[in-house]
Image 1 (tube, rainbow, N blue to C red):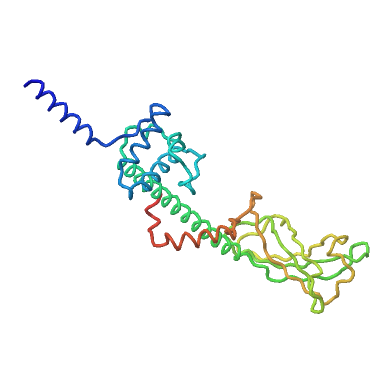
Image 2: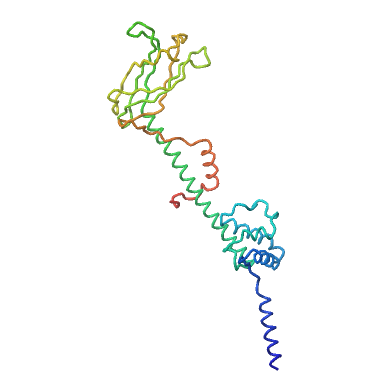
Length: 277
């Protein structure tokens, strides 16, 4: 009688044990290899690919770099088991799939937050560059003329006559300029050169000043072939304040940054950026 009851109890225990889902055991390499195969085989066929992907996702979430993520089907059970770690120990097949799904959701959330921060940074950089360009535009080159004059010693000398107005609210100590000398019958400029001019005592806000500058006559400005009807165009490239530091010089977005900005706008443009710190 007692023997029959014990047999029934033992059978019940075996039945309960048999109904328990197998779990991954990473306590040793042999145990990991065997347990991964057992867990995989315990799953319905339609879940096994998802289980394989789950193992890869969990393994790569621990910064493993040797695995071929793009070709997971090339991996065998031993290769997968080699990447297993404490995150996998004790998990059933369904738990592996669930944990991998959680890791993917968290990863996508981090990527989304990073993308929105990048979008905000690029937008701010573009706005700052545009604002600085507007500030620079308040300093105007009112007139510019190039001609060959005579030095105090009678030698031919190139001259640049400039008239400028400081429409900014800062005292300007130095101009960073670019000069281009052209003539109608020539497709290539005679001169295309950047230069600077340090303003004696600076130029105050609202002030207009005129100067006659003498560029190096031994350089392109002193080319004797430049005709008398050549025209000079001077553009402002930058300004320095009284502390000799560049003013309003925020760089514009590069082509790569512009392309990235447009791509991020398409994907995340409808999201309120103010929600991202």
